[in-house]
Length: 156
Image (cartoon, rainbow, N blue to C red; front, side):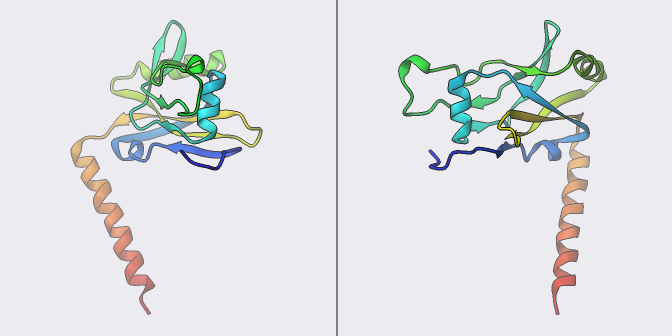
């Protein structure tokens, strides 16, 4: 468990999201949590790598995001680490995102989980489509070319 408490700043990042999905748009949303979950997040105990957003009952739900319980927490305040968490958005934003989800192959994935300057937990959501294998290979080639180019330019 990390010793330093996170007051503001990044908790978790989904680095594979931009590799596996062609992200077209991003939006910031709040998350409805319990007090014990917020305390765990202050210690950085979260994983959003496998997370995604789904539409249920007129709301958007953050699914498959793991917020681990503090090992020092009392048994009374234990919670389900993978429970569904409601996203806090305006109705117009929800309607727009649901419309984008209706497109074939569209998905919404969490990109970052962080505390803003006011200490509120936010999640940065990316709206996009899944990349095919050939698109992923192009991304790898482009990244390697940029790396090689910077090495050549750096040499005296």
